[in-house]
Image 1: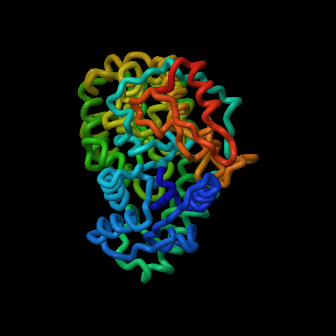
Image 2 (image 1 turned 90 degrees about the vertical axis):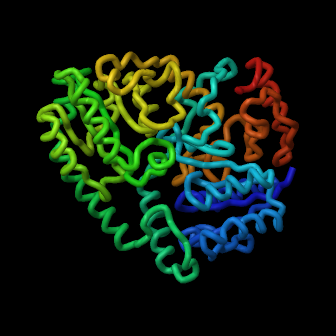
Image 3 (image 1 turned 120 degrees about the horizontal axis):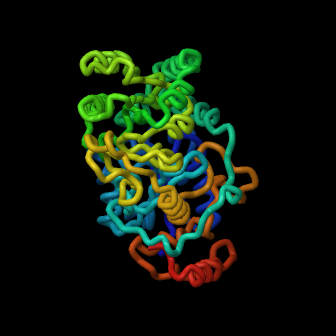
Length: 440
């Protein structure tokens, strides 16, 4: 096995630097490619390399880098960014394994790590799942990092400032979001102001919905306007496109007693405001008193009283199932499968959303935790974690990804590995024997 690892872009902050330490302790040699000043601010050193060329030059640069350093695996965060899309394709051509980090499918105390792709690119899409080898994971077995949002804001501010300071070093870099630190800072200030204003203005609405209209409203949680899961894994060109289609269907097919509630994404609070669009749609479809647009109501409470939820492919779909609200998925999502999401067209969903199968949800959740979820956060270390990254590498994965070493449709047990002077194959084999077989 080739023991050289390449890290591309990671989450904002020091996570990839810490993760590199875990890899190095496990016998890997780690290289890093930085694309902008923010990347460089959080990851320097002799094995950190700068890519300063154009997008057109990136494929040749990456191919040469992989060959020159004998790279055996690549880790990256977010598989839809241009540089990462190229890397995934290049890795397939050169027989290099690619592992993709992403925010957790289960929030808030998990991160996702899958081989080859996540979300709409996940190997779970379109596959039947064998749950027979999965054990239930209790909440008491998990850890919950605190004050994550504060760290995330500080890391983001540092990242964007470093990008601005070092922009001459990376003149051709193209980011997937705006990089202007003044503009971004203004957005965060606006977000804070709006949060306070909406919290005061909407403080009475939760009881209004959950008590007066309990089980007589549908919830539509909106996604961030620049979410690549919309552009890459849905039929929509924008959030506005999604809103328009949902309202049109609701107005024509929903019961006149039911309400439709759109909830703004909290991370998009300073960037977008759909008030004008909503008012226009209320007038156009005569939905006064039936169409609502809210911002800072607590999602769990809304989901508890919802008749169902309609969304593109947000992870809120998992939360919806947890709270017993049937889900209609309008994009490609890992939970869009028989037994979890509604299998009827949107027009029919309003009349008969069905029921959420909590047992099916629990089995699917446990499978995800067993297969690709890691307890922890990108933005704050778990207390007591022995790993530099701060994640809890459950199932003795120990960064060599025994469970990922065989492709997802394999039932072969992982090969013997000795990591950090400790034989980790024995407990894995024992688990496999007790459970009958590994998860497929």
